[in-house]
Length: 141
Image (cartoon, rainbow, N blue to C red; front, side, top):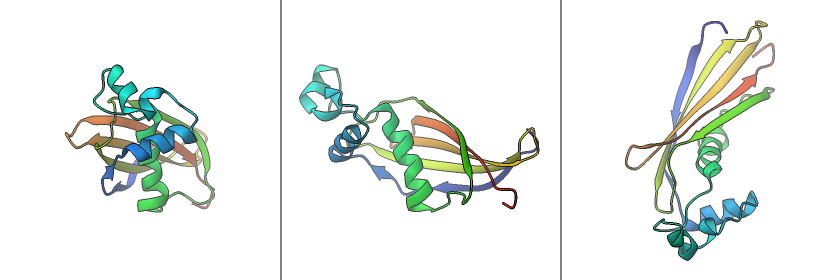
């Protein structure tokens, strides 16, 4: 890869996690672990309340930035890869603070590319998720 240029850094308003959001997400992705749906089952698993599936905070935080808060998804781009690392459990009443850094560069074939580097912290300042989504841009981008 050649030189990387930070194009922009976006921070969305906090996402306040609710039980309804967690349940809805778990049902949408068909991950019906009882700890995602029931406080009682979550307590039996050692948590204070229902917890979110690992992909919840990465996908919800990223999509909030990409299409909701900032509307900065690159037009005409090809999604080439995505990688998230989940570092903390997210529960209802948590606040999530997503930050997305857009980085432009040229790949080994000298094609224009863009990475969206995602970082999500909770209300305690703990890092709960990091990730990157890479796009191959159209030649005139």
